[in-house]
Image (cartoon, rainbow, N blue to C red; front, side, top):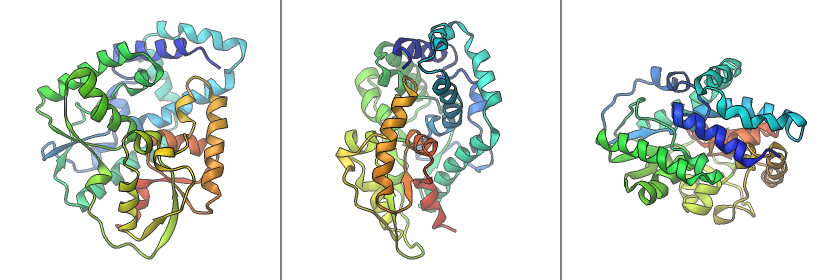
Length: 309
């Protein structure tokens, strides 16, 4: 296990200097939208919070963390905060495979297709789409989170943003619950699946839908994506641990202890595989962690977008 303080200080240092927990330049992280034909106008602003874009980099960095966990070398992590953010970020971006970046970009492109097919009036402004800072909050650096959240909230308010469409549970929780409490900024926040109006499908089938903790436990939204699937002829297999009682995927622990993340995730994967149905996730952290355990898992947006073809 790594010392939590070392992880927190490395992330906080990057966030202060680059507004990115990994130090990667914004233009390198956020490229998915360039061929999506999006405009900047609309009733709402699509806001990804960069979480899906970060997963390939998380997978690369945690592979190294897993390699050196509980070895004498892990003590050197404390010096990571002294490395210039852009320097380490460029290095991480270079060694992360492009095919993985494109794979997660396609998830965001699928979400755009779904919103357009549902007639949602929205736009996208990549310069406003920034990380929410939620990991600092999760790891206990409330001061660092509040400082970053106020910066982001101020940018959104100055741009006249009132309504946001989110794509992941972590960013949704941050904007919907934490920003009003810690910054005073209140936006109308909707996860994309709340706005979908799709019907049809190509015959009934069943999936094992994994509820992420923020949607299931804290926001009470588990029934909404299940209804979106049902509208397209897709049922959700019964799970003992779902909704408010959902079981963690283990992903939130991976920066502190990759071995603990594997242990927790394996328990959840066993529950999902016991249904015998294809596994579907609706959180980038869950998707990435279940994939690392060898699961054949799809994102909710990909499953829904398949019915549009």
